[in-house]
Length: 65
Image (cartoon, rainbow, N blue to C red; front, top):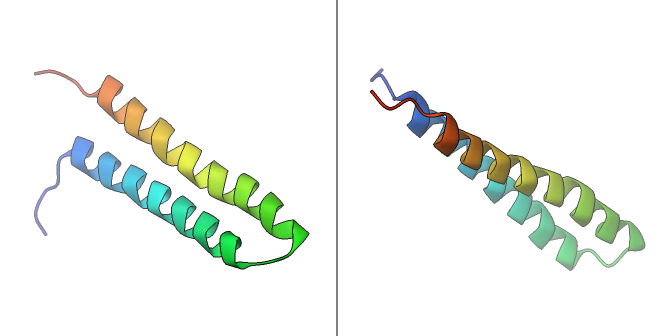
């Protein structure tokens, strides 16, 4: 397996979190129950928030050699 740089690996993980969060939110839009809003805000928002935070942390923490 090829050696993937740490920045690229972290950015991929951040992207996966954002995509999963958006999929959760899109699924909750089709679900017509009061709990759907709570799931959308908590689970979808948490996944998107983690992805965004990891993305920003990856950009800031990368070493410049």
